[in-house]
Length: 402
Image 1 (cartoon, rainbow, N blue to C red):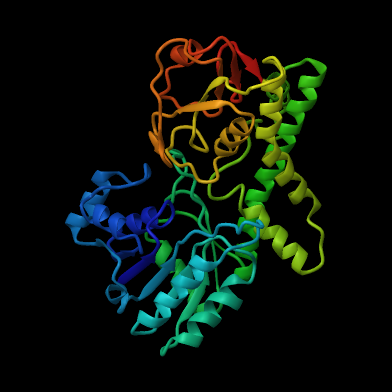
Image 2 (cartoon, helix red, strand yellow):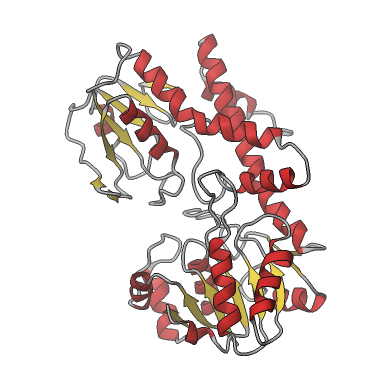
């Protein structure tokens, strides 16, 4: 059976790898020709699929990457695993999904099961994907949804053991979907409609967004009354029921938490419901870098103009090189607006835009901010890089805390 996965990023590549490892003939389609060349030469761009993993399935003859849509023509199952970002107005941008639909509609030569893993608002499968593909395709297809639950760099939970939600537009599509995923996913949960699965994915990350915002707001409160936010949260975490720990930080980042709640808010507004919790959480988390910069400025003579500042951790979370929607980017932007001379250090990212990660070499900055702390970072060198250390993680010994 031939499988095509549209998109070979943080979602699509692991999906393609596990499908290929289980014995399916998999074609990974991506419009990035450089990425395709690297993948076919066993060079992975993500931590969750190693170079050795790629080499394994390539030598098995069960995986190849391509940018040529002709290669997907006779697929039995096609999966959409493309980005769903926000526009400048923080509204859903489904252009990647629309492009994937067009590629499938114009190139699939026989009836196939099309599964959407890309995160989007309820109704996307039924009202956008199915209608767009059917309108442009010369053959009839079946449609299902199974929203991705990928946490980059998580060694405990991955594709195989994370429970997978799914639903089909028809029972035939749902059954085919279950049979496909059962080859490499241990727990499969069918829900009644695609809209339920789509909404569940949005709610999962809206839940996280709201609770991280609450932790960030608590950090501002505890600072005002002179106690440690991390000690308060640790104390609350001792309760064995009715509490889940969320920690404050510089904000939220990645492909899910900063984005998915806005898709749910978009849906709410479309039916006349005001998404107050979601919008307030977005505001709190987006404002955290500004709050941090204002505090650092107040504690450093009321100005950051001309000051040499080091920001440690450009990735959006520890131990990965992913900078998507990283709140550190907002932090750096706010520092530069204050006239600061900003350098950054991240041994996993190394290069970003037109700048590179700096090496740590003794006290050479007036302010050091620890935004994200990777295991590979040298804590002693970070601490020695300046006399004023601001720790957003709560994990550095000494320094000023949130």
